Length: 138
Image 1 (tube, rainbow, N blue to C red):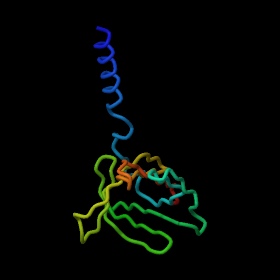
Image 2 (image 1 turned 90 degrees about the horizontal axis):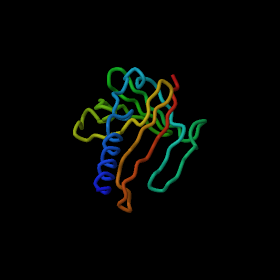
Image 3 (image 1 turned 180 degrees about the vertical axis):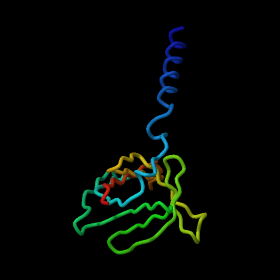
Image 4 (image 1 turned 135 degrees about the vertical axis):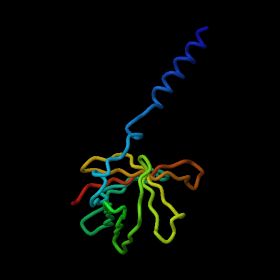
């Protein structure tokens, strides 16, 4: 019947869309290694963009080094963490606490731009994905 054919077509389209995508492609670590500065961010829970970065205001930088360390700097502090890649996910952790990890998804990575995605459940129980946009500065 027609309903059966439509169901088959919709299932086929869904399977085609769920196949490999750019987000499944492995990360070129040569593109990740280097210094990055945040230039805008998106807060999904509140649907708000923040463009107030740089020039002495909310400076937030990441430096991914070839030895799998990441130096993080903001206006008032800095930290050195270890990282590893699992597909398109960066796993950040402190050497003293390897079981306490932060997982960050790489949404986009080119030689000049890095977009990081943070998935979480918001206060209202809705699934949210915050985004941070970085430009290469080295």
